Structures are given as C-alpha cells and as structure tokens.
Image (cartoon, rainbow over all chains, first blue to last red; front, top):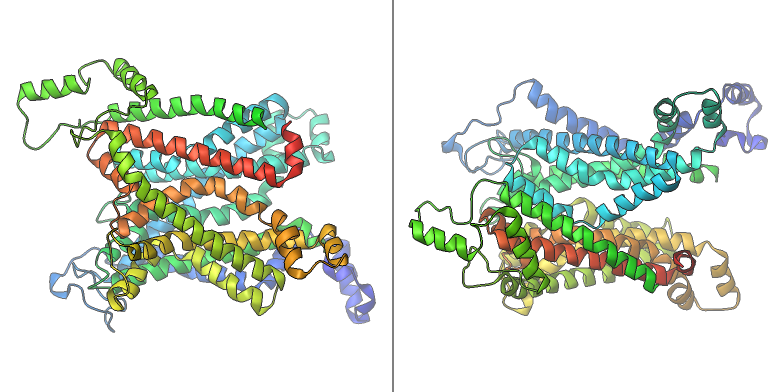
Length: 305
Length: 307
C-alpha cells in the first residue's frame, strides 16, 4: 500500500480526509510505481533527455533536414557557428549526420528490443504456464542457446546475406530474447497459482486466452524494466557491427558508423569521433538511469520497506 | 559434480555439431567461392585447387571429409593462405587474443572488485557515489569511443605509448585498458549489489559479534557470497569478450584471432571460417562450464541441487 498510510500519527488532521479518500480509492501498483519513479529526479531527467534526443533525431527527418549533400569545398571544417559540430571530409554537417545516425541507432534499439520482447514473453509464458516436461525441455533449449556465440553468427549473416538493416533487427532480436524468456518464466511460475488464474480456468476459458489476457499483462512490469536495459545493449551491438564495417550502408548511417569513421581520422579530425561519441554515450546514460529508476520503482520487494 | 560435468560435455557435442553444420551450410549457400578473383585462374589450376580442397565433391561429402579431419585434430589448410593450415593460423593468432583477454579480465577484476567492495562499505556516501559514477561512465561510453580517445590522448598527444601494433610490453597497456574498463565497471556494480545483500545477513552480524575485524569480515565472510553475481555474469560475458576483443584488435591494429576471423569472412576463406567458428564455440562452451562449476563451488546450496 501507499507509504503515506504507514505512519498515521504524523499526518496532519487537515490532510487526513484526502488520505482517507485516497485509501478508499486504492492505489494500483502502477500508480504507486509511477509516484516512486517521479520522485527519482535522475530517472525523470533521463526520460526527458531521451525524449529530447528522440525528438531531434526524428524531427530532423520530419522537417526534411539535408543530411547527405556533399560539399567538398567545406570538407573537414572544425566546429564553428555555422556548423556546430564541424563538417566531415565530404563537407556534410556533422550535427545533421549525428541526428540522421541517431534515427537509425534508436530505431534499431527499439525495434530489435520489440522483437526480443515478443519472442521472450511468449516463450517464457508458455514455458512457465505449462510447466513440467514442456518447461524443462524449453528451458534446456534456452540454456543451450546461451552457450552459442551468436555474435559470430550475426557477423557471418551480415557478410553473407548483405548488410540489410532488417536483418540486423531480426538477428539482434533473436539473440536478446533469451534472458527475457527466463525472466518471464520465473514471473509466470509465481503467478500461475494465483486465484485469478484459477478463476479463469474454472470459467472454462481457453488456454490461449488465459495466457494472453490474464498471464501476460501481469508479467509486464519486469519485462518493461528489462526492455529498458536491453535497448542500450542492442544499440551497442549494432554499433559493434557498424564499427567492424558490417552495419548499415552509405549513404545511410548510424552512430556506430559515424564513430567508426571518426575513429579512423582521430588524429586529424577528432570532432568526427567526439560528437557522435557524446551523442551515443549520452543516450546510453539516459537509458541506463531510466532503467535503474524503473527497476527501483517497479520492484515490489523494495516497495515494502 | 562429475555427473554434472559429464552431462554438460555430452550436451556440448550435439551443439557443436549443429553449429558446424549451420556454418557449413551458410558458407556453401553464399555466392562467391574462395578462388573467385578479378583475374580468372586457368581452368586446370582451378580444377586442381578444387580437387585439393575437395570442393569438387558434393556438399555432404565435403562436410564429412572436413569433420573426419577435425576429429583427428586437423582443421584443414587455409584457402586464402595456401601454405598455412588453419591450425597454424589459430595457433599463432590466438595467444595474442588470449593475452589481451586475460589482461582485460585482470584489470576488470582488480578495479571492479576493489571499487565494488569499497562502495558497498559505506552505501549512499561519497565513498559509494564516486566509484559508482565512474562505473556508470565505464558502462555507457562504448569501447570504440574510449579506445580511440585513449589513443588520441596517451599515444598521439602525450606520446606515452605507441598508437598501434603489438611489439613491446607497453603496447599491451592501452588495448588491455580499453577492453577491461567496461567489465571493470560492470563488475563494480555487481559486486556492490552482491555485497550489499550479503552484508545485511545474520552470519555477518555473527562474525562481527564474535569480534572479527572489519577486513576479516569483508574478505573472509562477505566476499565469498558477494562475488556470486560476478561469477554468474562471467559466463555470459565470455561471448561479449569476443566482440570486445574484435573491436579492440581493430582499433589498435593487433594481429589477434578476431582480426583473422573478420578478414577470413570477407576473403571467403571457407576452412578458416569453419575452423575459427568451431574454435570459438568450444572456447565459449568451456568457459561457461567453468563459470558454472565455480558458481556451484561458491554456493553449497547449489551443490546439493545438482546431486
């Protein structure tokens, strides 16, 4: 229950009425978590920062910012008032390139995480719900997949079947679902004995309906937390591929590609590395802080004390 | 315990077979053979080459010829460097990657455990916040940003080290730091979390009550439980270490196995690809197993579960 209720002696009488009202209305787990998150300034600031970054990256797309026109006369200029982050060797504005790259990096992060979430949640729920032999078999399969060095396979895939951005989504998503499946299974195991599931079964609902309507919505908390922490992992994965020269192809770009280009010219034009590096690090900071904040806010065990 | 290890090894064999079949199928389904060059080789030469590498046989036969040789410990000749066998190349390149990896892990454990333990001793004070802020930076600034920045600062600006290469003792410093820093940060966070959980438990109070000094309480009693999250992290981290080593080898131009692996793919060096994939897979499976054994050894409860 809400923390305001725990110590009635210190509450002023004037607010007692409103407290009582609040108590009657009841506070859902979600509202409770939301309040706890809102109190975490670092997490809120990170959320706002992320929103701003996303707005800039996708907004530049909406307003049709020119990110690809080359101007060789303006090649490799250091940062100035006209070009805040300087220009690259082909005379393109680095700020525009960073926004452009951010669009793809963020998209990869979000979409691949979504793929991982879908596979992981369904797999984990089915495994946990049916239990017994099916569970043992499915989880053993996950254990085995854990031991496979997927990075090698993704690299092979990229080289052999073209550097296709959709392939990146699917490949990364297919790797990252394993932990998600484990987490969800653990949750499902603990809630499948709850009364509302029993009730749903007693009503004779089909198993697919019980799973999708009653079980999955109740495991969503830890899933959200883990998803927030998966996004940075995925973005780094994409950047690793790009850095090895296996990511998206020109004229498209991503932060990983930009950093790779910058790293190879670090001696002459350090700003080509520094600005995309800052953009990516800042985003990763925000995602990690937000993820930590969400974990603290949604952690039921912690909310008790 | 022996049963546990035996089961895991028995499981690894089909996994390795599947990995090799999938890799093989992938290599063969891709256009572009190892001898496709801009300048066409004479037909007889190509036929001779194909015969030498058994490329004229059906795919299934090719696979079993390869597998048979692997059983004998022979990964075959490289198709790119005809005078060298895959065994030789791996034998020459892997020690470099291994050295880099071991130094990276060493840095990670030293810095990470130290920072984590220090932070956990006085939670929510400066002693906690300062190392943990550094840990957050270490996690969020990717290696491929840190590496070139190190190079810019320490090698180009101040000229303390060489910018790339792998010749002198001092050439190891920057790559190992670049590789180790991310893990150090992660280990620090895990250690802090694990220690915090353990330090609140009764047996720690008992140890304090019987008059054990703080150093003894931390090192002898708490750390054993506190580093459990670190150990379970190290299994999955191994695959990650590979990716890290690919990156670091690329930044600092180190002739390690990662570099050979990446170039072998673009060269379509079929035997080399198969050999490295298999080698890496065996390596990761083994390291995962070792991590699990250490975990069981650290936690007596699990010891009974396994029996």
